[in-house]
Image (cartoon, rainbow over all chains, first blue to last red; front, side):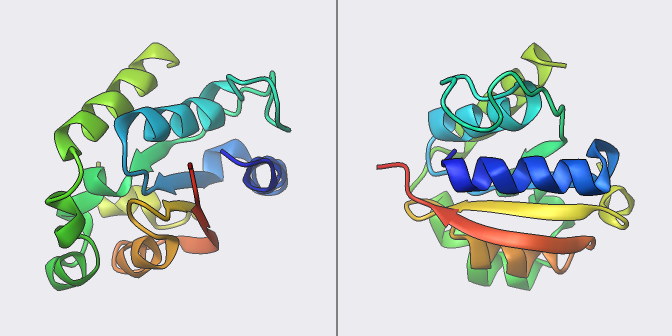
Length: 103
Length: 45
């Protein structure tokens, strides 16, 4: 996750409380989505950004995981095409792994 | 997980230029609920 977004997430969590903030991702690869999820749960694994050693434990989801909650027509228009070009199952599996690992 | 979980939440969206862009995620989240605080589209290259 880039430095600016780490700052924004940190400030948002401090302002509203970690119980009130949710992060939603759109990463194209399981690895990048997993790294971002790890960053907002356990802190920046690269030790480079504002979330280094900051464990916010924020709820974090990939947008694919929320498919059943989204208006089907909006999902169809905005997201469904990407299901054909990315490994959706791998992304969802990685998100579940990261949440389990750091819960 | 149901929609109620999101009703009073502040939503931070981190899209991906090569995956799902932030604005597309925002459109979807508006149909679930919660307050979108910011929308970003990162580039991992």
